[in-house]
Length: 578
Image (cartoon, rainbow, N blue to C red; front, side, top):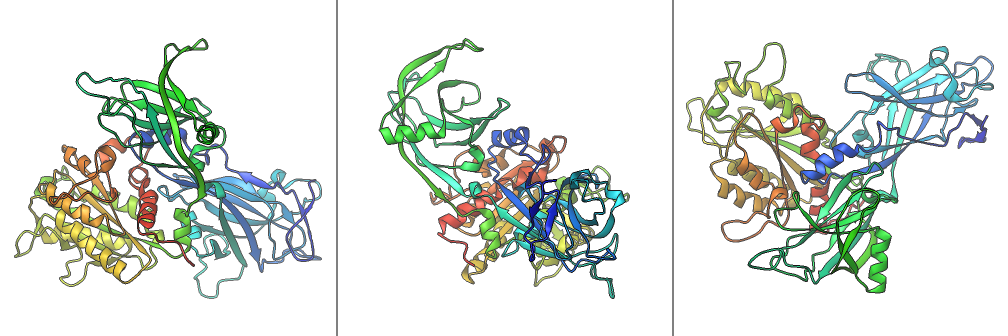
């Protein structure tokens, strides 16, 4: 029966223990989604989280002894249904069980998924049945609790204590019967923190340009077990050089995996998608050996496909100039040390959105309650970020409209106040947005500079006050900005601050200029004075590109946010202290 000793004082027996339970295919990283995001430059990070469960002061449902509880862990699906993930062992004769069975799942910041409810049940047939064989409907119910992963990982000790309730009962109800408490503890896998720093160079590259030398860069990718090639990162482009030496790159061990092969692909500038001109396949261990031996490895050109593939070996070689492994602080480390993500939003009220009273307007409020594109973006992003903000007071602005009896404003408080810009919660943003539609006249042009400056001012004040906050500004717009250089200037300055900017493009406009602001798709932004941004803080997503796909707008927007926060912390040399 798999008997073992539980970690309960007195050494009570545990029945049906299964050790560590890992996520099934639904919980595993989605290679197709990862590939889609990577192909568009998104470098989303994730962590493997091991969940442990314990309970105190459970109800005693046995007559001659104490209850024999076990826990069942569920995930909440998109349609609201619950899917069973795992069951713990049965702990005999205990009202304060500490279950040995763990559950390992993947934490993606950008999904913000609710992993479901936990139910305690009383087991009568523990002697003849493993916990996995028990019929839940035949057991006595002891209580349940629900939470999100975000609620757990933002705790300083990563332990969330919840009151157990019965059915629809709320733990906040007066005189509610006591069902005990459930503690969920999350521990991050060490592989989430281990990184490898590589510095690579090549020698004797062949010229592929007609009138100059090649402009090479490297793309490092992995081949998954299914054979899919997934890009991990790329180096900068070095112009006109046959013996390039690139800046160090940092690879996360968890993104690499222990059994995957790595491809370093040498590509011509601007033709990386169309033509792979040089290639080398090496594991991480192989690269470490190249560094230790101080030797190079020849690049090759695949000349055939299939089982009899032959490669043309070239004189060009790849060298590993430096190789080091170290443990880095992770996104979750900063959350656990008290850092918050503070949500801000700015909404486009320019006339190009159309008359809000007409159904074809992007600002039309549907009487049926169906959200428009602006409301959808606010809800989707806000519902993820709100869990990382303790006071849930969100600055909210509008731009490109004319308030009653006033000139056009390119940054006005959405709540109508002249003194403060904050609203209470996500619903506060939604109500202020609807109210503003009745109190302003849509105008123009579309300017981003003023709202970015306002957000940067708040972030700057927070930095001066040594607050543990990182700010996220969501800008929702339908058109092309007319202050492109002013926006670049504001973004270059804001890159020094604890701030990221998410831009959602709604409607059918041409958003090419927006993509210029997102350095994933080009060079770092440069101000009018020639100063280059110290980091990329912008993520732009046209809503039309993701609304019919498998990847949500939230995933597309938020996938890079943990990396941007980490880049800021390392830039400022800030460590997550307790």
